[in-house]
Image (cartoon, rainbow, N blue to C red; front, side):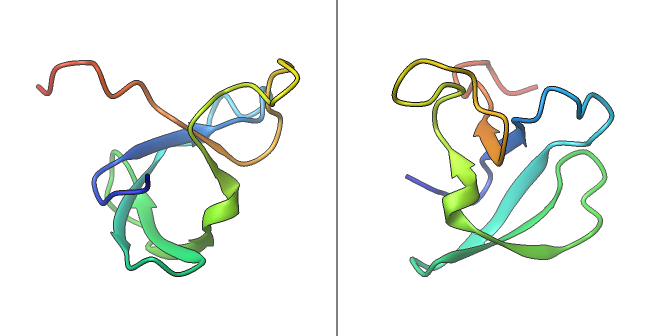
Length: 77
């Protein structure tokens, strides 16, 4: 489930420099409002079908497109 405050990282293995994104608003439609997770800059809207809970596809291969949910079990700092 998509919720404001969640952080997603790029699934593309070549994107080592791209900053993760943070969900700022989601109202149940096909788009979510996001910003860069660390800086809070670059507000934009992305399609929710680009957001994935798992870093692997159904057949077990690593995802190469979209964004993957960061581990939410880590304690907040």
